[in-house]
Amino acid sequence: MPTSAQFSFGFDFSQTGPYYGPGSNAKAVASALRVLSGVPGMLEDTSIMDWGLPDPEPSPGTFNLAPLAARISLITSAGGTPVITLCTAPNWMKDGTGPDVAPTPAHYQDFAALAAKIAQTFPQVKYFVVWNELKGFWNPAIGGWDISQYTDMYNDVYAAIKRVRPDALVGGPYAVTLPSATPQPGTLASTPHGAWGYLSQPVLDTIAYWLAHNAGAQFVAVDGPDFPSSGPITDPLAATDKYAAADQWLRQHTSLPIWWMESRIQPDDSGWTASQAAAIRVAALVQFASSGARAGLEWQPQQDGELPDEGLWTATQYTGGGQPTVLARLLPAVLAVLRDRVAVVPGQRSGILVARGRAGTIAVNTTTGTGTALIDGTSVTLGPGQVRVIPAPG
Image (cartoon, rainbow, N blue to C red; front, side):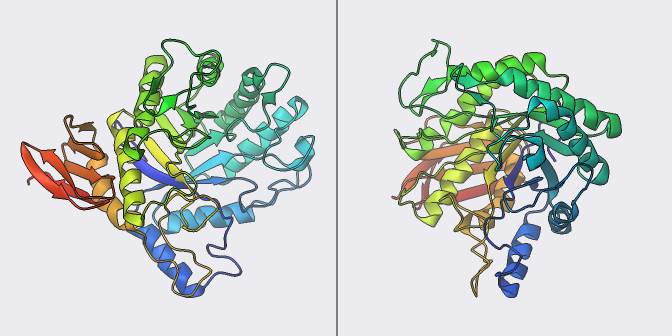
């Protein structure tokens, strides 16, 4: 877990494919677990329901926490640090089914009681995120998120967890910071923007409301891609500047640690090579770490999932699967540098990122051609999609 100004990488454990259940290949699963163990201490987030897990409380007072226990055991056995996202809610607490439906206000206390039950059942889990992407809190009458209702639910959950687990660290609101290609209604001169696009001022206002009205929090959780829903509008490296810009805005509004719960960087049909995708992910991690974020998670660790983003291992349902990806091979050396604060070195050529910290230097070529990085006054040649980590002397 991040301590002090330390940065941690992680992922959301979305089991839409058979990582280790029926349909997976035993040897591939064993290989995938070795990949997990090869990067110990990663933040590994699991929901309490959906995304591969059944209802934890199918009827009032009747609990089914064994599947969640199995996932937490998998995380800890491989040396990971478990994180629980308290989402979604049992169906009897809401008017509908599925992850996009929030509990009704009459059931906020029931959901809070379930959260407390989970926190008490799993004392080895220290970090709890309340809900996911404000799902179910969109109010068409106001054309925006009903952040006051979410905050009411959050406050109930926070109080319930703290009553039984004062040591637990709780955060929210897990809001989506989706950039747009052009300024949207409500955009101010101070709204963060750049070559990557514009952040949504209404979403920033939503986060600001939660920061001002929550009953307590130990970190602020956000997520979002670095490209607009309409597709990329700039080069992949410039797009990662979005994360630094968002972190700068958050730092102006709170001293809470910043956690990026999801951070999609690869558009559909990007055409990126595996090396280029890994290099751009490393560039995004550098942006997080250099701008003061404590955690940068990506969605689901298995490659060949529902999103094109790079994973850590190849799909386990196939013979020969579970093999480490380019990113998995890079992470140990990259994270050894990023765990201490780094600074981006200016004056690089297009598509090249260099960051330096107490533990060493990271040079990244996000392009498909050969590039040159300037490191301490020396030109260093980088191949297409190459990441070079230079440990500090001694």
